[in-house]
Figure 1 (cartoon, rainbow, N blue to C red):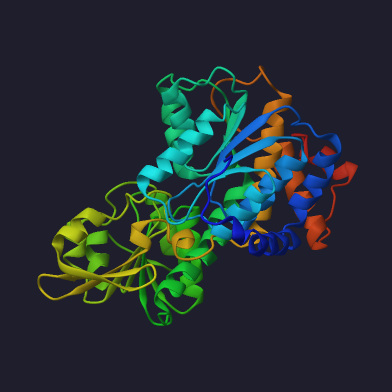
Figure 2: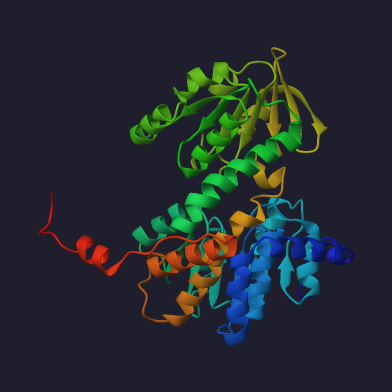
Length: 415
């Protein structure tokens, strides 16, 4: 079969979900309308490793309407919505995604994306780009895109090592992506995932947010807005200063570990919460991660420290340490907003996936002329997406007059 999913019988339910998402993604629907007329991707094959959500489904439908043959695998072993996978498979998209997946199945499905022999590659985290380069099947690839900060770090390392064999557009670095998706999307969906997994009362809780990049800011903002007391841990002095001026308490993790009721890692790095931190946590502490990979919390150490463990409810595991204290881990330490919830709301992914679609088009239209590097998304694409979204929201803005433009372009006049 040209797909591997949990149950094709879930397709009708998935169709309803996709319809709901499309209603809330008007900018991408406008892009689809244009691309379905011109069909620029006709004759091209696109492999994508993205979280298989209803929002991703709208993007896959858009690329298919634009003429592409599309294959899709999950960007995380826990992030697939099985009804969406069924609906897309039912529409002729090659979907290899099941929730939950073992790590072996996850890697097997990524290999299917490699074997699809794409000429355009969309990725979320860098696993597909890495697998393609490891396989040596880069010759026919025009270029690709990258959705996340974590993925861009990996691909920048590939570029630095001289290993990158095709251009990758840094979708994550578009203003219309990181200012909205990373901040507002992750802020809301992380809070959503934690509440769904625990049903815990947020006001008055001490929430420790590790990292104050755009994701960490969004998480801290949402928890503070719900009445939590927020502590931020950072290694970057500028971000730490910003967090302090935003009204957050800032301290090292070894001190925050003693105080926190809820922990959220958002750094993209390893060993953010380690055994020495877990040993300091209070009884009942809740630990979660909203970074892309499950490396920020040392889950292996937690399991080795535990005298016993049990599953309390879906996506909530209780680890009882030898001294009797209980630590609660959400979504196996994987990305909590997708492992325990549904990821970002459709309205914010509307912007992100406009970036994906138009970046893929940019790669195609500039075939052979782009450097084999991680490249910035063109400003005109970014601005176009902002204007499409404003129009969809019914928001109007001012325009500069010719006199104002002239003033801003000169140097002679001052006070």
